Length: 259
Image (cartoon, rainbow, N blue to C red; front, top):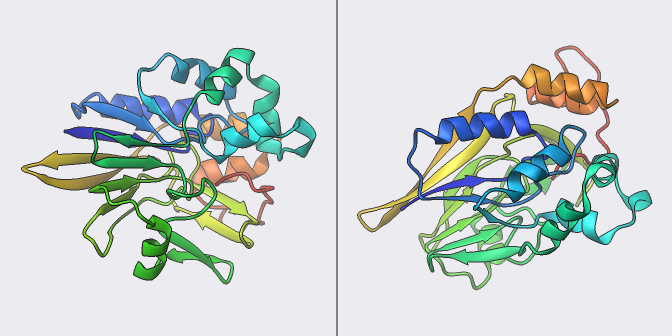
């Protein structure tokens, strides 16, 4: 069994297309999408139309929930732009997506943690920085989930760890956005230091589960140019460099554009 795990596309259809071209050579059985698919200044409507046509396993992330639950004036700039572009069909589609799911009895899918779509699972915000979560933190966030594999997104940070029980825990990273700033639960910056699109392949062979984290090149300069045209220099820099500032350049505020 081979499962492709995608998350945090954030309306970056260019990055998603590159991931799917890469996937075409990997003979996966199932594709899962862990949510935060549309929010951002790039191509939310086009990305929604594409995703709605795919027979994948889709989850709702925190940004879909915000798009559904909040009035536009309460949304940040990324959600507000997506809200202005999405069709009623896209909203209906999002409203039907589950926040978590059990796949084939062995793989638990969630966006953040099994209990929350805004909680970091395999990482922890600590003194304005993001560090790998401790085994105690992971166990507490895992709760009663006992499946062989748990996959999550939300942080945009690719990571593979084992729980104390031996469970394989996987965050594929983000397809569409490799750096962001956020103020929750405290101000912090996430930077993957590369513009490459990220995803993972989780595989069961001989009764054992393993995971491969993958980074895919794409025309990130074109995506960055689109962000610039939309008046989002923060996203432009993040898409170009996988950082929140260019070399010797100023930090651009993102108004919680990721996560």
